[in-house]
Every structure is written in C-alpha cells, then in structure tokens.
Length: 211
Ligand code: IMP
Image (cartoon, rainbow, N blue to C red; front, side, top):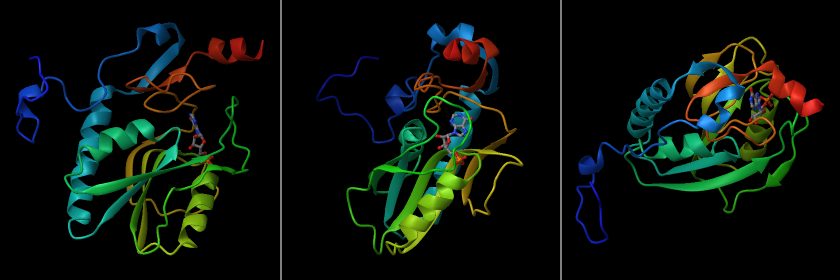
C-alpha cells in the first residue's frame, strides 16, 4: 500500500504491517562471506519485541533515556525503541573497540561523549555485544559518576565464559558461544553491520584482510 503525505494512519501502524517497523530482507552482496547464521532475523525481531514489552512495563512510571553505544548498537537501538511504548529520549556515546582486529585490547577510549547531562535521569545503556565486558565495565563506571537516577544495561549478545569482570545486565537478548560474529550492527573492519541476522564469517574473509 502506498502511503502519501497527509494520509491518516492509525498510531499502531497497522495498515503498513506488511512493512514492519524494523529492518527487513537480506544483503546478498555478503552471501559469499558468511559461514553460518547463528541468529535469524526472525529470532532477533521476536526477542527484541519481547524485551521492548518488558522495558515498557519496567519504565511505565519513569522517564527513560536510551543511551546507545556507537557504532554497533545503532540497529538494536532503532528496532528496540520502536517496541517500547513510552515517551523516551536518545543519546549516544562512541567508544573505541577493536578497529579491524577481532581481539579486545582492553583499552577503552571515548570518541564521542553524551550530548546532555544524565544526573537524575533513568538511563538504559544499549550495547551490541558483551565479550570481555571491559568496555561495558568502563562505561558503567564512567556514567555512574554522573549520578543518574538509575542505570541499567540492554545488550543484544553476551558471549559465554569470556567475561573478565562481573557485570549486571538487566536485559540480554541472546547468549552466544565465544566466536566472532557480524551483522545486526556488528562489524568486521566496518563491514557487515547491515546484515539483518547475526552470523560468523568464513575464514577466508580474515585471511584476505591480512594478505
Ligand atoms: P568487550 O570490551 O571485550 O566486551 O568488547 C566490546 C566491544 O567489542 C563491542 O561493543 C564490539 O564493538 C566489539 N566486539 C566484541 N566481540 C565482537 C564480535 O564478535 N563481533 C564484532 N564486534 C565485537
């Protein structure tokens, strides 16, 4: 159905339900690079909707500020926020991650700080993945010093058995084995973020990158 400017659509978006308010489709240009799909687009969307409903319940009587950790969290942030049926505000931080490599350095650098103060705000930090946990641990410590009223974490993925620091994660969509993954915001050398699923890369992709 074509929607024109001035058309009056119900606020639940039902007439355009065939075009769900989420990323859809696949990105065939990467087909030869993907080894295995660990989490399908459908699995991710179902879980994100579930977490969105949980957040809607948990923050029903509080103001909510979503803080996305760039760049990886931008896809989750976009999808998740449209499943939270509450007024909310957005802010972003950017931190250094691995660059083009696949091992954590443990060194965290803030590349972009928040635009606004968070004192007294209910902050929900949105992350793409918790691997060693060092990035998140640093961010939480840093944000706590700014005295938010509450500070919770939502992450798409958490790798099992590799976390180096204890962390409390309020909302976690999936646990995955400690393998390097791409898609749904996650990159390898800045590529693959626009894949609608989470998957692993063929070994040749890493080999080609170093040769
Ligand atoms: P941590 O500090 O080791 O927990 O790493 C966190 C950051 O490393 C994430 O926000 C990602 O940017 C990056 N990262 C960790 N594991 C992966 C992965 O499997 N694929 C892509 N990026 C990853």
